[in-house]
Every structure is written in structure tokens, then in C-alpha cells.
Image (cartoon, rainbow, N blue to C red; front, top):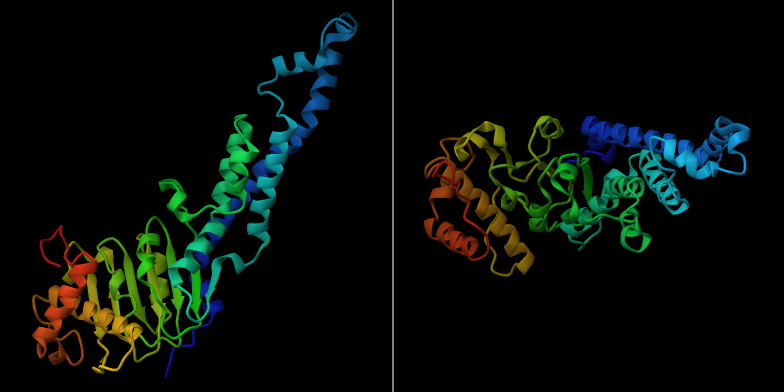
Length: 341
């Protein structure tokens, strides 16, 4: 039996942070709209008001346009700046009125999940790019050749700390059976929250490699996990997987030590098979990483947290081999703050 949580259900579970994000964008749309109305009226309106105030004495002697700029609390923006503001507002409006589509990423068979999620974040990054363009235009520093690309996409690597703290949630539906997720680690910071729907996953523990002290990481088959992700102040990812997959929650709010943060409900079996492909070997590695995390969190045993815990103790050589393989490519699953994993 496998999980069939819909995209709509996942969006509903993360509706609050998405609504907050859209509300902030809508406020900026309104502000830019008011600014555009004021400035488009300024060139003519301020000049007329200034000419009236100068009266007959000023007629023919004082340039009403220049005089209006002098007495105004801010200068009239040039046409290029007004055009940039209009384009920025159009980008923001499209996000506000675009429905849930900008917040959903579909990953086809064989595609890299991290690449697809990065592209989705870059598209949403247009919001921050538009805000930057508006600020540059108002300051008279906008240059189309340098800054126009900000309205097309803004890669997550270029988001600043404040922008990452405002990141909206994403729902990611994986259509292939073996999602490749390790590259997501670079994207899980700030307020990024990802709901990963992988109803056909053949890997029992695809998120094990993403566990780190400050990131909420969970996988299972219950929609309740998305509620926990939503309420967590940490960035994070939840994978909704087939029920046969391993089930665990790593919650940074649990404490400084791994044993306080990691709760494992079930550890799935991955039977050895020398004929398996490299991708299947990666699935073994993910499962071995989860086993190592469990052993480290429990001081060498699972303390009854996991079904078939004897599997963790019966093959110390296999665990050591997995540990060495992990050491060759990734930092060990150790909680440096607590001195234990």
C-alpha cells in the first residue's frame, strides 16, 4: 500500500506560510501601484501646480518644471525608471494572481530533484528580484543591461539572508521511482520548506542524507508530518512515501543531542543483492546512513525505538563499511555541539 496524498492536500497543509508570502507580495504590488500613479501624474500635475503658484510673475521667467522638482519632497522619476517599476509590478502581480502553480514543482522520471527545486525557487525569486529593481529605480540606480534579468529569475544562491527568511513553501511531486535528493542540502536554509510527494519511491530512506542539526527532516505516509513542518521555525523537508518505507522525524526543536531530535518509528529492510544497479546501491547507502544515525543517537542501540533492531547489531562490518563510504564523501553524522552524533 502506498501514500497517495494529493498535491492539493499538501498545498492546503502549507497554506499559512504561502498565504503570508502572497500577502506580503500583494502589499508591495499596491505600494508600487500608488507610486506609479503619483509619478505619472507628477510630470504634468506638479508642473501645472507650480505654474499656478508662480502666477503671472513667473510666466516666461521661471521654468515651472524645474521649480516643481525643487519644491517637491522627491524628484520626478525618469521614464526608464517608471518603466522598470511597471515591469516589477507586473511580475509581482503575476505571482499574486497565478494561483498555486508557482509553488508546485513536478519532477519527471530520471530528473534531479535538486535541479528542479532550484529552478522553482529561482522562478519565485523573481519576487525578490522585482523588489530589488523597484528599489534601484526609485534610487535612480537602475540599469536595464545590469538589472533586467532580476525580473526573469533569481537563483537561490543569490538570495540574501533576509530573502531566504521570507522563502515560500514548495510542494514537489516526484513522478520517477528513485528520487535523487542529496543536492537538496544546499537549498534547506532560511525558511525553505519542501513537501516531497513520492508515491512510487523505491528508496526506503531517501531523506537520511539530509539530516543535519538545524534542519527539520521527516519521512512517512501521514499528512500530519506536513503540519509539523509548517509549525517548525526551522527550514525543512518532509517526504510522503509508500508505507513500506522507513519512517522517522528529525526535529531541531527536540534539543542539542541527536537522541533528542531523532525519532524513528520504523526501519525498512533492504535485502542485499549484488546484481543491483548503482542507483539501488545509493538506496542502500541512504538506509545505512539512517541506521548509523539511529545507532549514534541511542549510544549503539535503538532502545526499542525501531522494529527489527537486531538488524542494526547483526552486521557491524556492514555498518563500518557504510560509515567509511560516508566519510569519503560527506561529513559524519555527528552532532559537534553535543559531542555525540
